[in-house]
Length: 351
Image (tube, rainbow, N blue to C red; front, side, top):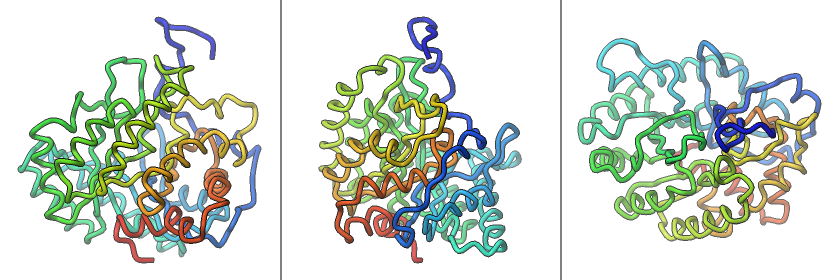
């Protein structure tokens, strides 16, 4: 887009999620590569909002494109919250929503274990007072809650809309947040971190301070391609690479490879007349995927769909085919880690 608004493209001030256009996505289809390859989708959402919905049937329809998805990990997205009772317990409603969707998927005869693990939200800024909330989330879920996510994405420039969430600046450094964070490891809970490349140093500090807590960074750490970072991909990559190299020195940190369909990356797949094929997607995302695998090793990297957020830019099967193209030269053990085993170990999933 060429229109300008206050020195930035209009696209940079729009919401971070591209609208899904089923008719546009239907213009391209692919047969699954390596269709027998076992997959755990390490990051997806289910939601029901007045303006949009993505339920178990929608997820299973996407999975039905031919990929051998054995299990999935549901990630919190502020849906189904309770509207009564103490506000700190309102996220329990999301767990109840997800459990209903899991049962519905089972009743449909799904071969995929939808929500085999759940990453919930609990406000860690409550400090030690978050403890009963964590216990309730674990109890209500029947033990499916394996981790907690508090989105920390923040940037001083308002044109950088990298997330729909609006947390305060420097959340990971806040003493109260860290007091709440300290309640995770004693309960066997991991932490899903979502910060952008300009904040990775704060995640390094958190990982060092809580060496016994397993952390997984979402969406390869969000190297920005919007706002003041548009047109500076090489410079941003170098900054991101240096920060990720430091992060990789902390053995309690793993990485999710995905999220490339979000606006923040600055890719323009959705602006084309036809949706991209897996070859096009693979070419665009290869540097980020290969760098993460090089730095962290396959045993600390896991692929994610980030659906339906990424669905505005490419189809589910196309994305997994792109991952398979990128890893075509990897060993069988490395592929097993990336597509299945790392996520199974991190989230304690048995398939």
